[in-house]
Amino acid sequence: MKFVTDRKRAVGLGSGRTGTHHHWQMLISSMALVVLVPFFVFTFGVGFGGTYEEVQAYFARPFPALVTGISLVVIILHVMHETHEAIVDYVHGVPGKLAHAAVTALSYCLIASGLFALLKIAL
Image (cartoon, rainbow, N blue to C red; front, side, top):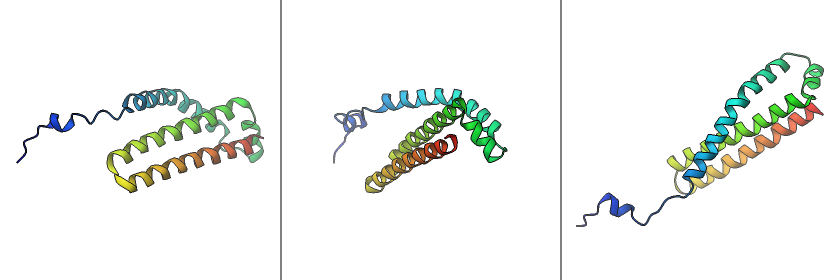
């Protein structure tokens, strides 16, 4: 019978070496979202409810288009990284790797389609 303490089981495993990087990444994106979300709500609210020509003219201006595009990218990347953490914590093995790849692919497809739609409206 082996008596091994928790410390002895943990020695030699090391750290994942990504915790600090992930923490700073999420902290910075959270601070960016604190500023971007009110700007996005304001710019989207002003453009909401108009005719197609009015919305197209509104988003053709640089400020609403930039705020919308930057908000889209930061929000989706923030959600993607949080989803990756949930997958790492709760899904293991091959299903975890597949879920990780699927979330990454879906996130980048959402970013690409959202920016394409914004450019289509703005130009």
